[in-house]
Image 1 (spheres, rainbow, N blue to C red):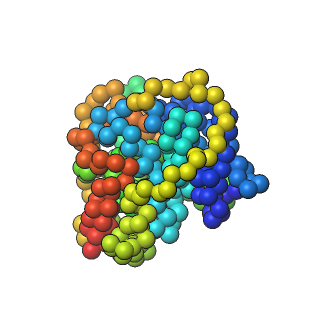
Image 2 (cartoon, one colour):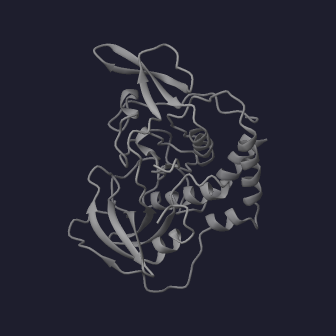
Image 3 (spheres, one colour):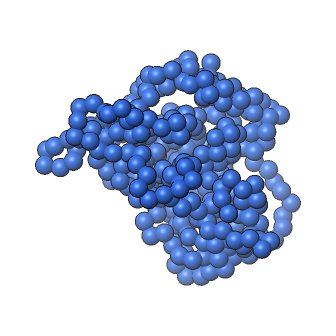
Amino acid sequence: MTAADPAAAVLLAEGELTVRGRISEASNAALYCTVTYDGREAACLQAGRGGAALWDFPDGTLAGREVAAYEVSRATGWDLVPPTVLRDGPYGEGMCQLWIETAPGAELLALVDAEEPEPGWKAIGLAEVGEGRTALLVHADDERLRRLAVLDAVINNADRKGGHLLPTAEGTLYGIDHGVTFNAEDKLRTLLWGWAGEPLTTEALNVLDALGTALTPTGPLTAALTPTSPPRRSPPPVRGSRRSAPPPSTRGRAATGRPSPGPRSETSTPARDLAARPRRERGHAGAPRARVPSRSSGLLPFVFRTAVRLGS
């Protein structure tokens, strides 16, 4: 099953989960699973409420932010986030996301020994590479990355690293790890900075206009981001052991300010490490604790303000 399959979200939400293993490098109790429903099966990632607490995001809200990022991505029509749902799992309620197999050898980020990027590349900044030397960190001048940069601005993504970019053999690009999005404070932290100060594309402006419409009181995105209380029913079955469960725990123009690195701490990330961090690894530093109290309440005003600000 591919992420473009309309049945993917139903499979993830209603199917029977079977735990195949734990992703050891992840910090949020992430499990590699298969999910089966109505004769179909797919691989997925399921992350519950366990994992390291973040001082600037309320506990228990990261899974809801993952789902909200998927809903906003779907509303843009770009489908840059794999299908993601909120459901019960081995560690309780969490997010379940379709697993994406990446294409080997796809180059979206690079370190080059030059002062300026070559054609087809955009400069991010200088990175330390050891022994007092620096190299220029660049990303591809790629339409897919440019769309993802717009989405990151809309959802206020505080964690866009190179390991969160998943290019596929079919030429599709997906972004993952959106648990630290929708903070109440401006908190954009990203590698996709090569278009800073350039006018937004016509396509991006049209998408932002469409998001504004979708976020009207009766709009479809408003409905998708509004918490509901569905009738209680039995959760989908889950197979697997709980023995290793962790404890709970500007006007049509791209922004020109660089992402603030924040104070150096155990969670801050040197520039030289950003392009090579493994998928699902999360480091974070930034502004004071968000004021979003639940899995999606409070997201609507932020997304609406951002869409209007960027597209006006």
